[in-house]
Amino acid sequence: CDADRGTIAPGTILELPAGSATNFAVQAIQYYHIQAVATNDGPIDGFDFVASPTNACLFNWSAIPAGAHILRALFAPDLAASNTPIWWLADNYQTNDFDSAARSDTDEDGMPAWAEYMAGTDPTNAESVLRIIAIGLNDGSNYVVWTGGGATDLPPFVVQRKTNGWASAWEPAGQVQHSPLRGSNTWFDDLPPSQAYYRVVVTNAP
Image (cartoon, rainbow, N blue to C red):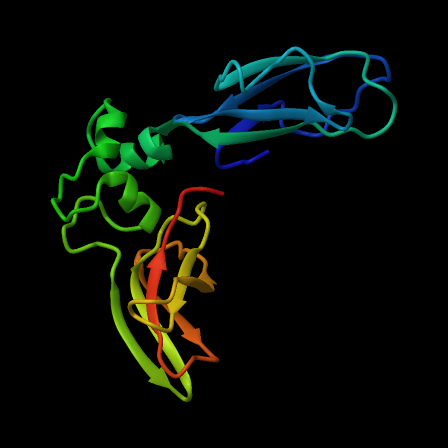
C-alpha cells in the first residue's frame, strides 16, 4: 500500500490454511481516502470507493485459495476547490473552510492558493510566485530559469516556445519535473531557433 498515506492491518505476512478467511482493516491517514483495494484477482467485491468515498473499510477475505496472495490498497488525497489537496491547505491555513482557502489570495500576490499549489510556490509569501527570473545563452543553448517547485505529485512544468512574439503560436518545447523543494528550475533549449520567446505553464490535470 501507499505506506505514507494509509495502512492495512494486519500488515505482516500471514500463513493461513487454504479455504480459510480473515479480516483486514484498511485505513487512510487524515485528509486522504481509499482509492482502491485489490487482491491478486482484482478489485474486491462489495465496495465502490468512487461512488461512496471513505477513509476506512473492513474487508473479510473469505475462502482464500491455496498459494501466495497479496492484498493492495491505494489512497488518494481529499480535494477542495480547483483540485487542491486538503492536506496542503491544512499545512498552510488555519481553517476548516478549505474551499474558501483554495480560492483565497491571502498574501495578495495575484495567485490564488490553488494556483500556488500547482506552481509549488508559498501561498503565505507574496514574494513566492511563479515567474521566469532568467533567460540566457550558454554554450550554444538557450536556458530558462523560473521559480516554483515542491509539488511532486503534479505533472511537470511545461516550457513553451514561439519564434515570433506576435504571429506564431506557443508550442511545447520541453518539460521539467517538480522539485520536492521550493526553489528555482532550469531548462536548456539545446537546439534553439535564431529567435525565441519562452513561457512556463503548470497544470493540475494528469
